Length: 449
Image (cartoon, rainbow, N blue to C red; front, side, top):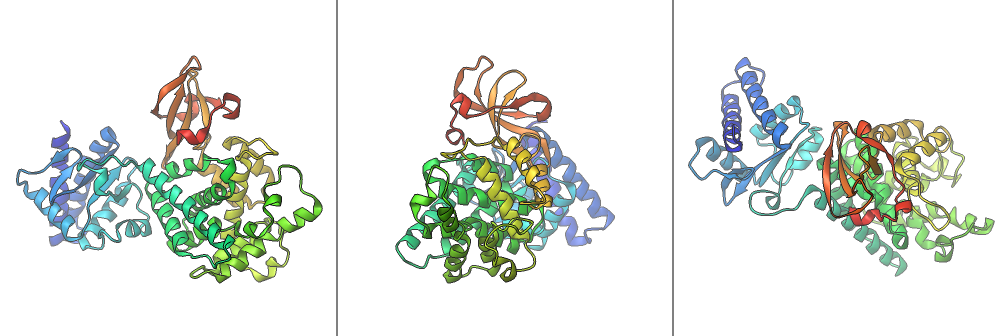
């Protein structure tokens, strides 16, 4: 059966479910049979194509590369509903669960899903592998990929931190709107392609360490927060607090911040002031939740509360979940980043180091969750395959971490590949021989992301 025939069967099944719900409640046997038919047809499509997008071009429905201009009744009905609710498109991807598909249909049928709230409603319902597709991702001719959308969100967060820095250094009270927007954008991308966004945390720019570190810590913290199933408000607060966690360093002598050698006792005492200085700045900003300020104040307290500042222990909320998550993220990014005084650890080695710190500096629960989330070979790892090719793990299947996307950059003879390509790898742990140190091979990971 060709693609267009499968698409048409899907349309008929989708329209059939919607018509059935006009007559019967969702749990009626007739509706359950229709749900099952829709699921079976969609699975056939996704197994072969991995993603399927339907949407509108000039009020005409398309699925994939097929445009329904022939007056198909089911297509017209679906197109009318999409247009009425201002939904440009919907993308279904491999890994979708049947229960989530059924819940999506119910939301779509009741009109709760609209263009301006689609991804928010989907996120709140914890539906994975269905998202709103913008027109430029569809048959209308655009080619903006999930990876490029993630890069746009990442770069937007970098820009927000840069703007914040300029305002503080100019003696102004920093504005919070760009920070909040950038975190919202990262959360949306994490819902769509969580591991593609996480891979960008391996963009390490020594000259712009403060900006990149702030965004990387936020991305890692949001990743852990998603696994913890934080509600949307807590996730947003976590993203904002972790993005601003080192704000106070802008009030410390830059020579100390950028010093390559070991700090003197006096210099270290100044560094230890940055959580309180950052919290003071955040309190002056608009719309910064107290829990985000707790993150800024407490991210160096340590799990056993042996860190600093000591007076933060009594002033912070008793629930330190968001702060503990940020401490994990801060530690992971610091260990995997090149500094003048230290080589970076690979992602896998970083987890091993953090496991030794669990229970003392780090909350062991969140160390374990991060390890489970990253898998055997974390996204962002440079790896050698068993056929001797070298590649970078740029994405993973959220439901099966053994399914990875590897960007191949060296062939089996060790020669650079002029046009790196992405390889979809199953059973990753069986096909990966081990990690590769990027510095040893003079590979700049940020040029590959």
